[in-house]
View 1: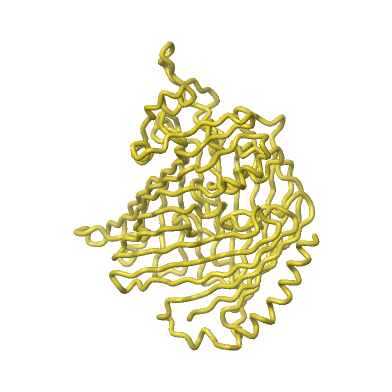
View 2: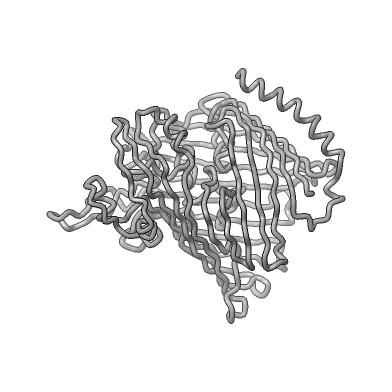
Length: 498
């Protein structure tokens, strides 16, 4: 609390400084062709109970804390590229100083981007969001939800849909491929305290491709779908007794990560990497159907995501029972409720409860117990303790025993979110989630644990103070999974163009 009190003094001193800076110019005097902009933000949260409430922590790109008193001062400077030019570049630096967080100094974003037409090459850490789910109202994408800190990487992408030639604009594609590295080695060492398995110098890979059919300018229905895959590979696995396993990480191994294949290592400890595939591979199939008629003041979107951990659930060896199923309705002429999202999340099946890997003596294999977001060697699909996938599968940061495993990955959840703009300067959003957890197949709970999470967030953007915004969020949790918590978060920000 002493550190948080010091942070509040910083908060009090910062406001008049920025008010004086705001008098120096107005966004209305700056051309919208400006390409340089800045952001300054201060944030503080206080809570009572077990933790900072769930929706004040999750889906914030890891810039959050479960500690009951926390806050940060954040500043960013960015150059946006000019989309009218065939060739252009952009960059960004986004830094924060925090209290009550997993680290005091945070490099949230630091990147450079070069674009030619629709092709982008990005180097560094940059926040990117799913284009399938609504980033404000969804519970989160199953593979990349925006729940964890960005992973530094080299990324080649067509992030926006690009028309396929000779299709009369009815067909468009987008996709990406990347290589990177996790940055949480020191965090893992501190969090596990030598009591649980951890890793260091782990590498990252991702790739995805999407296809869209339809032209909304001529017909209101569009359909899109695609496949995304990601992997953890390389690095060193460190056990509590000091034993280590160095994972393969040569150029040849990198090719086996891009095109998944088994390792040719003779290390008996890596037998699973030899008989299956090298590294911890995850992925999802995505599909969405969208109806937005320009002549009508509303639209509807339905989407489906199927997560998988191995070949059996990537294809159709088993029924696709596990899913994220969502519906989004836009009501643009209703200022009180402009968008509504409902989602159903089911992850109980995981190919079933039985697993047997083939051996020379018994060649048959039964593919089950996929254990979502966990792995036999790697710590799990997390970065700085926060799950990279959907946060309703509770992140390891909540574990109290130093484990970086996901202990509640068999869940059934319902989630609803809506937002509106009831007054010209004020908008809001509400998130409500209810989930039940059966633990994991390996460690089932003695009883079904329940989790209730809610958030009301109101943002004020005064028209007379261009670029300023104030936001207050009030959240609460209940249930046996995370316990009871209630808290509030205040954020004040100033953005501007140069």
